[in-house]
Amino acid sequence: MREDDAGDGTRILTAEECLKLLDRPGVGILALRGVEAPILRPVNFARDGDHVVVRTGEGQILAAAEAHEPASFVLSAVDGFEHTGRSIVVTGRLSERHPEDGADALPLRPWVRSPKHHFVALTMDEVSGREIEPMRVTR
Image 1 (tube, rainbow, N blue to C red):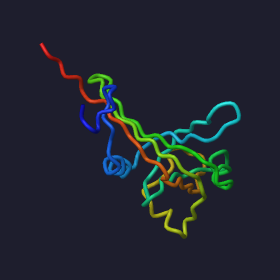
Image 2: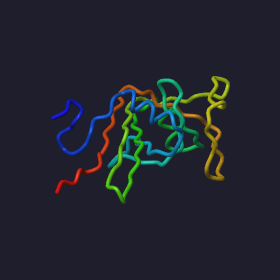
Image 3: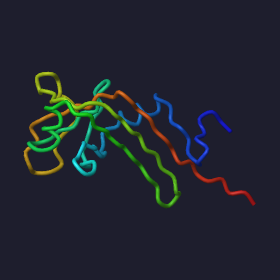
């Protein structure tokens, strides 16, 4: 078994591979602490050094950032035809970022019409990833 083989048909991604995938702005899921279950919110994001940054309006994400709550971020890609995919999980703490700190220079623009004037950053305390590799068919 290879060192990066998780033993379940997945390959463990290196930290470098995870960061490279997070360097492509896109859409992921931000998981906040909820009362009975985690609160999951789709967000567009950009990586800024050792933070994942999102734009948001007033609401749960901003409130969690103001309270410096722990959170997780998940970036996934799936190919249903080939049965392959990968996921990156980032865990850290939220905080508010301000435009004067350079947040407005990030490639983040709202995807919805509601006002998104706030920037929230998640520290990248833990970063991990896995990839489902194509199955090798032997005959």
